[in-house]
Image (tube, rainbow, N blue to C red; front, side, top):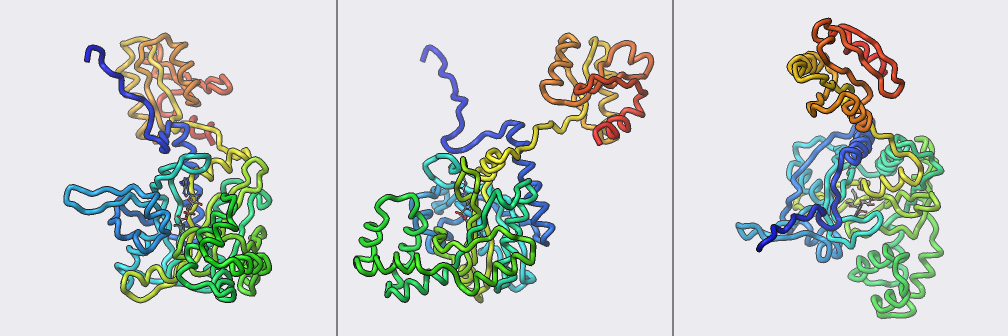
Length: 420
Ligand code: HAM
């Protein structure tokens, strides 16, 4: 090799780098998610991204297990999977300590999850997901609460109710339709997954017929799915939500959700913007999952909200926050002799809780100030001989160009009152 090969600057396919502006938005999203969960009494938990592959084998949808996980064998010959979702981990954690954890438990986490999918708008190979789950409670109040948390997150991000729709259905409706049509239990999960992808596939009816291997039943199933438009339970849920101030829930029996573990209420939050009509996120009730760990069965309900679709929603609705760095003040250095003084001033200000960066570039003062402006740092102070000698500093507000000259011990107070 004569010439050294250059390393690529591209990230791995389907994952993202978060530059400061991206991370700013990420933090904005996360802070709103956390705040709303905590307003509803949810406690934060976390876990490793690594799980035994076995966890996913029988509990989540086959599609996810076989086609979409990142799975590898570790050096000790164990099969390991990067979690494709949080629900099995949550179920495992609660089941492991079900006698000690006071139920109902309200838990939330914002976790990165990995799925080997074809990257496209709204779908990547790594994304972050808010998961809020209510474990150990059944009934309409619990289902309504979970939907109200989802609604609360949307509202706190600035969405109006008309901007999104909460489409709700119930797996029990599907089960009773399968029963009435005479579809054997072993086909149910496959059919439900096929229904979940209905809008995305062209030859849905043919696929359904092939799957059931019975044309009349396929026709009858489609008829029944169209005929059943709600249930007494879903109407009660709607009334409960109305009382909580949630007015944009609609019943939509075409919602199915992909995972096998759902047993009751299921929902999808849908973007109503004409340029972004799509499902944003969803969840539902899964009363049999925790029982798979051998202990007693514990009812649960929750949802997962992804950051990718959330960003697209904010963008479509013009709700993105404007970037502002955490740095409040940049100290610019006029001459080399002032460097030590600037460093001491910065340390004193940090002790007073001011976020300060120092420009060591040695460039002309005008260039240093322009750089601070480009970085959107709101205030600058130029430290030179005069400032060193007099102990007074001109604090410049870059947005308004206003200047205020103060001694070191009054700078913090001035910045805080200007920043509000
Ligand atoms: P899920 O619908 O597979 O459900 O994922 C939840 C949300 O995560 C999606 O609606 C979407 O916002 C986001 N998401 C999923 N896959 C991707 C992807 N490849 N790229 C970007 N975003 C994605 C679950 O995972 C359930 N475990 C949720 C749950 C919690 N159910 C009950 N509790």
